Amino acid sequence: MDFYNYQENRGAGFGVPPDYFFRAEREERRRQKKRELRFIGSIAGMCVILYVVLQNALSTVIIFEPIRSLYFTNETFRSLITIILSILGLLLPFVLGGIGLRRKKLLTDLRLERPESTALAITAVPFGFLICLIGNYLTSIFLMLTEDAGVELTAPETTAPDSFAGRIIYVISIAVVPALVEEFALRGVIMQPLRRYGDWFAILATSAVFAILHGNLVQAPFAFIAGIGIGYAVCITDSVWTGIVIHFCNNFYSVAVDFLINDVTDENLLNMIWNYSQFALYAVCIILSVAFVIIRGRKKIARVPAILTTGDKAKAFFINIPMIVAVIIMLVITAEYVKLL
Image (cartoon, rainbow, N blue to C red; front, side, top):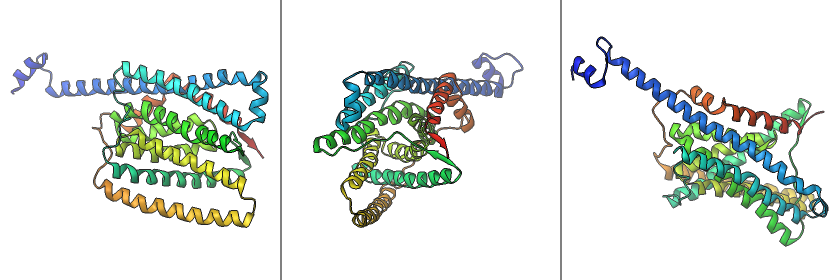
């Protein structure tokens, strides 16, 4: 097409170079992508705000008797309350957020289907769990460094019950429900629409929200590292169920450690069980992670054309009023778990 026909077909005025229209279209696409990202970030921020509001509103029932007495004296009852708060307090905001994203056609698929490759999914679980173990180790170092600097970081504590029925409910409250609810919320509702801007950006941005959501500096660093491993496994297998299983394994591991510490009173026996189990656990995870890399082959997570820079994406997603308010609220909550020695 010659220059004059190009002008006529584009509806351009005489004397305007063709490159002008490409630049104008590109800039309009950039603005559109920023608006979309800003909307997703606003939804994520509002979900976090609503989560805090609902948690506090629902928790008020604990101040009334006989619920108050049962909550502070009965571990099983406390676990049941935790389950209710997780389902209503966390699930509901992100369900509403997902509806908002669907209406804007930004969320079309939560990736709740089974993974296409069973072998890839099976090996992705120990790979993701290994990242969680590394996250635990790095967080321990971080806590030691902060303590040496004269700052004590704490987190909400849970007590494992002694009865069999109580322990079943405890596992459900700590391992099953959070894995289902948090992965649906984070790796489903938030991460899936972000993947259109690049999987790595989606993984890192979601991990940051995941960290913010925990509201303390003991769990937040770990949540960010674990979120990267879980998000990567979800993107590679293209199924949120992979993330749910990894999340469950990590939380169940914490529960198993609680049970072990409570049940084994002989310190020498406890150390022996711990050392052997850790060696076996890391060995299995490393071997299966190598298998994951082999099975994955050349499959890579999705990349998108560089319409926006990483900085542009981060600004659009995080620099908006709901997200800023959410971060401020969580920082205030986090401050309650920081103590100067």
